[in-house]
Image 1 (spheres, rainbow, N blue to C red):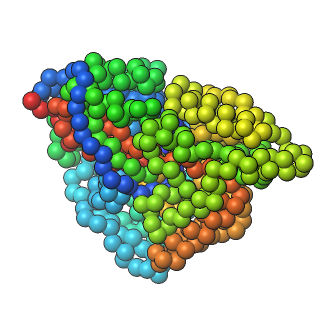
Image 2 (image 1 turned 30 degrees about the horizontal axis):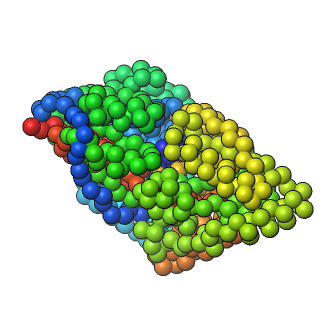
Image 3 (image 1 turned 60 degrees about the horizontal axis):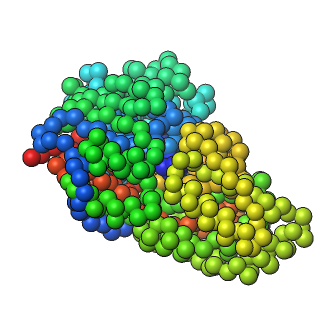
Length: 541
């Protein structure tokens, strides 16, 4: 699954997008597996960039505000939702920076109790409580499953969850998940946020968790001043080690220049900014600031609504006309990697460079445009993304010029991230869009491209329907043998490249910049977000 990064995300059971959308507790299950690459450096340089040592309040600058806090329902698949809820919500497993899964609420690794039928057993740690002091038991996990499967609720995707036959609970800490059919993605539903049954039972799940949340994490929700900030404070009933930082305020600063200025002046002590022109080099020039970068599961692309841009020759022409190397070298100054598919190279053996065939070839693009005109296709296309993102808006200008050279006119029509991801893309109100996906380590992309995953059933915002691709992806999901699963996934990518429902652009680096007296941040380039281990952060000096 994925979350959109406007920053979008993938939900546990879904993927994220946005500048990219996020993947919240719900989204991980079904999220695309994107691989992580190597680490970048750490440097300091510039002005203050930090607060005094021993402080107990952290101010984080975020470029995007969530639309809602419920990561399971439509509108909650922004990375922004995951960012602000990660300190509060927890899951049975958590995704680590190296793309592995590690126990969080689980007392040790889950085990495969049976392969036929597939049965996964896990045990919760003793003594875990919700922030209000109520015990957290496997009944809460069963409630989470029942909530996701309840068709009254506007769940982003039920992928993986719908493979479950039943959940048995031999005691209050042990659960056995018995599947109707094999599902290679089962770890993703254990990486989904567990919901509090005693809080949500009998409530309207489409609304109740949108503006408030209750979790078992090291922090509790305190206040959301919409348009300004969201605050969490230390959980006095936390079952684990108490956090050294007692209060975290997420300030919403959509303008990248203002975000950088706030870090440099010390107004905020941590930022996770979207890529921008010369950004990494600039941040490394700030005094008192540490910078970490790492490639992972976030990938930028041009997305077609194939119901509106329904001429294949036009889509292929755009694929040939986009000069991705120019975008990366001139706009990103080499701080990204060209991408040739909907998975990343670190996801071998599942990845294949299926879009490699579309090397920059404006002459071929012009011939395809002429063929499309002869077929009655329009050569004027609306091009949209999230407004206020300087990098994307610069890329739009470059791509617009590239298309003019082959006879395609792009008309720019951007919207705020909240409108773009909350309304326009789910409703199909776009022709050609640009966003990024962020996902879990699992390579499943069914929720993004399955013919039966068009909203409200999934995250197929492309309205892409290819029954053979769907068959291959669904078969891959239930194939436990890795090599056979990889073969099916690679074949699906090849067929998708022929249809061109999208054009991959580049693999994005995750960038953390923070006061050098802040210890603990460790780049996790997945849907787990920068705050996957925030309970361990502390100020020193």
